[in-house]
Amino acid sequence: MHRLITLALLLSLTLVGCGRISQTEDQAADVNVLLTINPDPPGVGPTHLTVSITGADGTPIDGARLQIKGDMTHAGMQPVLAEIEGGAGGTYETAFEWTMGGDWIVTVTATLPDGRTTTRQFAYTVDGDICGIDEGPSVTAETE
Image (cartoon, rainbow, N blue to C red; front, side, top):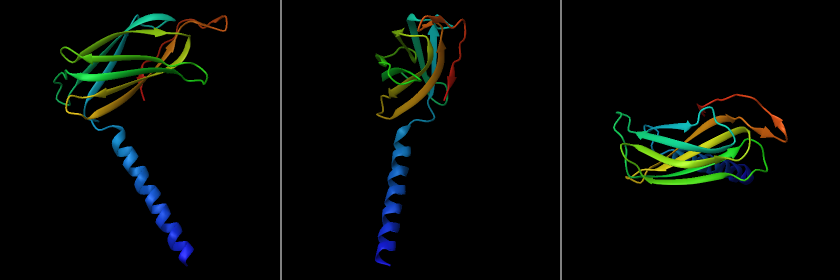
């Protein structure tokens, strides 16, 4: 009986802990984050990222600090990182480099002026050479 009570207690603590993690993942779900790239469709090499951040009412949010991380969907590739601060009219811009053709997930984490954080992910397929094979044109830009 003692073991059953201990097991139930441990299970409940685990569930409470998981609930806290999911609550802190996105503290500003009401904030709109839009990522655009230039050139579009993306190809291997340099690109320009523009992130627009607005409140639920459409008001631009300035003064945020953004961390951008590009990861390929397969293991073994070094992520591409960028940081942006300030913003004007809710618009944040930075240079970025697609280092290889294939499927990418770009994660934008914004720390807002009020201290809340929000994270959004965008999926892209980058045209380019993968192990000597040209993939041809293809692009997606979906939030996950």
